[in-house]
Image (cartoon, rainbow, N blue to C red):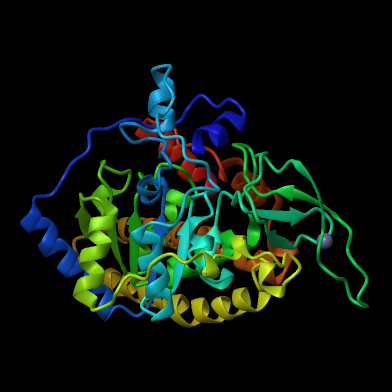
Amino acid sequence: MSSSYADGLSPYENKGVLGLEERYDSVETLRLKCGLLADWIQGARHVVVHTGAGISTAAGIPDFRGTNGVWTLEQKGLKPSMNISFDEAIPTKTHMALKKLIETSKLKFIISQNIDGLHLRSGIQRQYLAELHGNMFTEQCDKCGRQFIRNFATKSVGKKSLDTVCRSEQIGGRPCRGRMHDTILDWEHNLPDSDLTLSDLHSSVADLSICLGTTLQIIPSGNLPLYTKKYGGRLVICNLQPTKHDKKADLIINGNVDEVMIAVMNKLGFEIPEYESGMDPTRNSDTTAKEMDWTIPTSRIKEMNVLYKKVCKPMRRKRKTFMYERERTDTKKETKARKQAFTVKQEIKTEANITTAGEMCKIENDHVADNSVKTEENAKDIEKCRYSMEDATEHNTDLKMNQTV
Ligand SMILES: [Zn+2]
């Protein structure tokens, strides 16, 4: 369970804001908000969902910063009372609803911070899922980098070596024979490249980002939904506790995530499928089967890069046009010098906006296309903040944000 996962991580002091009071919308408010969300999903072109530990509590897996979360209780010297193992837990209504939305093309991509493997076990295909912090039911080869699905959860965390050998075949049909390691990140680890690249691209292209069961405090995962806002899309946050980005949200739903998804699916006219072990690849006894390969297809990243250029690049140009128009309407009272200063300031501001919006995206895109374009300084700065907790104070948060620019 997640407290054994938490015990396996190295000590880390700043775990963010913990145990904030939960809020609940009234029945009528919740009904109206779920109806609105369903309408937005129906009318959206590209929907992305960002999931956190809050969607797995109904499966018996404790979250981290909730009122009974692992870190919240740790602060009091306590442990969570829930004790289901990762192997025993099964996908919740929310996991199954998301699977249905993917199948019906209403949802394009899921970005998860969860390591419990429940998205995978709901039967979602790899190309629709990013697992930014790893997955207890997958392992990765240290030689060829391919990932494979396991039949049971790993005992280790922190990318430690396992007693298994790579199942992939190299060109010519020879087995790879590389050593496998778990995919669970420890605090200092970088996020997996392909998962993060796809997350950046999808978040930027999305016209609707929905955050479910996360307080959005871990970066960069917690900041990805903001890319959707930067490119003119909507942000919806569904969580019982306040989150880091509530002020930027177009809609905040304070309700149980399963209840919200049931109401939304009902309004959309979709039935939520039941979990079936036959659809769960971790229950597949043929471990050498092709479906057990859990590597992100590179073709998917290329396709998303094309879509990103088509959707997001024109928006950057549009912003520049706005800037020049604003310049033309300046009052005559302004002296030439002041006007020049204003222009420079605006240009810097616009440049900063663009960089913030697409920072990871741009850098990762370049990284995919050509490693040499990524400057050492940028790379170093990104590495620093990839899997670190944002400092609690706003001032330090800004510093962290700036480090990524
Ligand atoms: Zn291998």
